[in-house]
Length: 478
Image 1 (cartoon, helix red, strand yellow):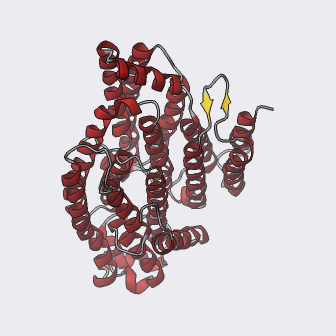
Image 2 (cartoon, one colour):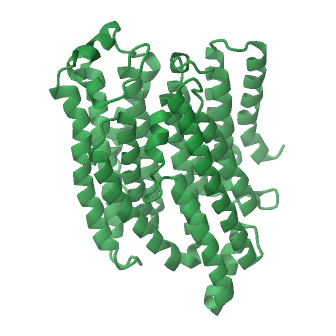
């Protein structure tokens, strides 16, 4: 059997088993579907590790295995498995059919793996759509909630526009090079740059502009981020755990691999774009987050700020830093959603800062775990968030790095923005530890918080990873 097909078989078989399960026992609570899904994700990761050697190509180069692609695929599958674990029991709380939801997630996981291992632009576009379409479905999955319907529709309409841009960009790239394989595109562009073929390069640069516009919109980098808070606010927490963590990791990983790979000869085009995106994300993300009281919207603007730092990591061409940042950000995000799930009651989620008031007295360990995660978001020393941000800054300031002239001011702006971000993270910490719960909040919590074993496990895992990476891991150059 083809090794690549063997590595994808667990996800496909898992999807088929869930489809059969949904047909045989519709609309029933199914813990079995969770077990099947997690086993499929873990088995696929193990199969990729065992059967796909670095440098291997399959189906005439449509799939090309690289060490970076494999690491990003591991991250995506691992984070998806953790997100799947969080969905246990929560989906019943928000009146979502668990088996159907998990089928969508497995299809999305298949898209993420192929996005990381794509070797030509046809596979790249198909994988991109296989990630995008399930994401739209997940955003609007709570169909009885008007906010979820709005989130799904807004994500779909704007996402379709980005798909058109993505396809248009790939078409221009093909027109400029006459190649569909990413390695061949790199060689053609490199020769065109060396020969000064202005016409071909102009067409390729236009294609790259469309392509980057689509991807930067997808990852919600400023100024293409205005849709994100609305989608986050209307999406249930289980779906958010998938959309905001493994999906973001996959798309950022794809962007890095494309820019470092086939579009490396056009670095003079994409580096200034990344720099502008990073600077605007630091300004707009932080300033808009300051006035937020809704927890989901606040995390959405935090994602914009962190996206700016990831762009800087891609800009400085540091693979270890980008992979480290993606992994750290992914586990921090899942930890924050696990905390919000656990802090909700058995019938409702926490929604605003006032819902967390007094949590430090009533649920001390839960509040402490969320505090550590928030400190990591803010980049406080001894946390993974600090190590990731410090690694990006250190790489950017390293002598001999070929970076645009305005890199240093943007780095300073991003660091100063990090200081500003501590203010809105502290708003959550202050609500938990320094404020008393209102009578309304106390009444909602009368039955206790919804701390289940899976929320506790993910929170403990997040805290351990955050502190371990922050205190013990040393990145290159640090």
